[in-house]
Amino acid sequence: MRLTCPNCNAQYEVDEKVIPKAGRDVQCSACGHTWYQYPMEVALQMRAAELDDDDDDDDEPASGGGSAPGLAAGDRPRQPPRIDKTVLDVLREEAERELGERKRAQTGLETQGDLGLVRPTRSKAAPSRIYGEDDPVPEEPDTGLIEPDEDENAEPVRRRNLLPDIEELSSTLEPGSERADDTLDDVGTDPEQKGFRRGLSTVFMIALALVVLYLLAPLIVAYVPALRTPLAAYVGLIDGLRASVAGLLRGLVGG
Image 1 (cartoon, rainbow, N blue to C red):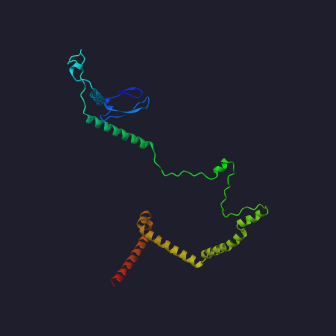
Image 2 (cartoon, helix red, strand yellow):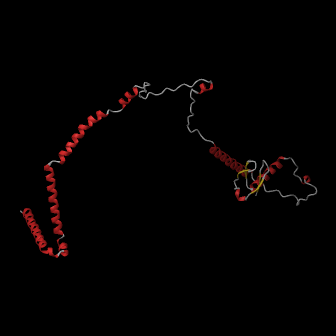
Image 3 (spheres, rainbow, N blue to C red):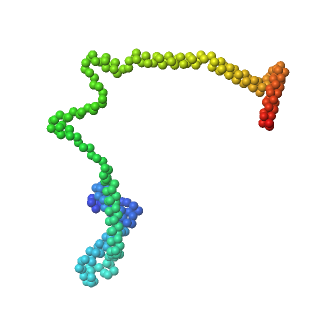
């Protein structure tokens, strides 16, 4: 199918499948002109209908004498079939509606609504720069800091006021540290507490050793057969104590 630009008469060869039955917008790559293109069949039918409308408007005689004398009745050119005006009106309406929708879509993509951004206001100092006036000096905020004194003799005094006195810090820390050291010495050197801790640790270690010896007696005998007799006596003593404790508990529970 051949397309011809109505603006610059540039011609393009395209596939007929590219143009749908309802038509579509086509843009010339040479001049950028856009027009609405119908398929070849619909374009021919619309062109024939326009020619028929023009023929109906002319007041030419319809009799056979008005025809060319050299042409017979069978040699007259066949005219293309006429399309109903209703179909043409429907096609035009559809084409106009689609073209309007595409234009609105393009307009909606190109334009941008108000985003609610506030334009920055120009400061009042701008006209002063235009007319050569000096800009106003902004006032410095009051930060509560003491401005430095230009007097050189006041520098050591100001530093003493800002920094803490070392003698005062030492006087306040020494008594507390001494009390803490005294407390640690008292806790660490108490003979009663030290004796209690040592005794408890010793009893716990002896009990743990006896339990381990009782549990590992068969293994020790297997490696050191010479200890069979004392270990057997020790295991028998422990078993007797266990039996006595068990009987005592049964008596308390049963009584």
